Amino acid sequence: MIFESHAHYDDEAFQEDREELLTSLAAHGIGTVINVGASLESCRHTLRLMEQYPFVYGAMGVHPSETAELTEDSMVWLQAQCSLDKVVAVGEIGLDYYWKEPEGSVQKKWFERQLEMAREVKLPVIIHSRDAAKDTLDMMRALHAEEVGGVVHCYSYTKEMAREYLKMDFYFGIGGVITFKNAKKLKEAVEWIPMEKILLETDSPYLSPEPNRGKRNSSLNLPYIAQEIAKIKGITYEEVVEITGKNADRLFLSEH
Ligand code: NI
Image (tube, rainbow, N blue to C red; front, side):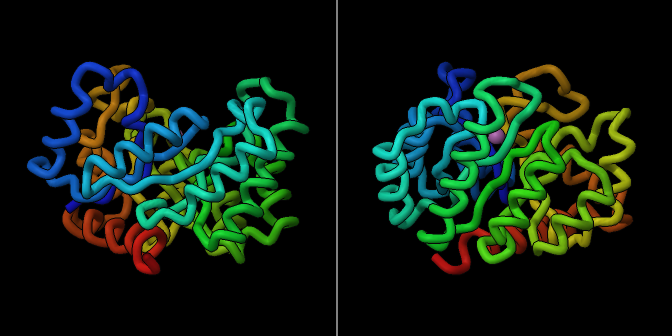
């Protein structure tokens, strides 16, 4: 079964058919889903999805672009949720300089606070980093993120940058972008990254792979991503599914 390591089924894009879609996943070979918080509201919704569906696990965290809403009180609430059995990670957290709001200093403050929270509750982190490769890496090094562990989600940087994240023993979430024709640098990076460090993800409803690029994404598109990785790595589709599943189990579920 395929392990979906990053989706946002709380998103309003699934308002009409969420139940139908989620209950159909198993029949399409999707075994486990991590629903990843991006705002306080999406964390609350993630908690409900976790309760409703046995195969859904949750990550609690606030996306860099949403950090203006964070307060010390909300950090207390977030940390309390992290002790729930089915909460398996802190995320998504990080830096996003593509969107300029809130300003970098605010993003950095809450990235640090949430990373420190992950250390306290002993959960891995799910890192979001867009147009912020150097600052993300500098902060992770300064905060000793290698002691916390986790995954760089929707990995989209170079092979050289991958080497630095691998030194910290991080995993790499590979999604739909790998199927895009112009993703030459990412394909090079994936060729280089050890198979034991790759996780499959969609980031649904965003970033649909080819041949569904531009449409709403769902975990049903994971086979296109696995097929592309199999091609790049010169192994079978089944091997990609099995190894990435074991990787995600090891990172998120084995200690729970
Ligand atoms: Ni995401």
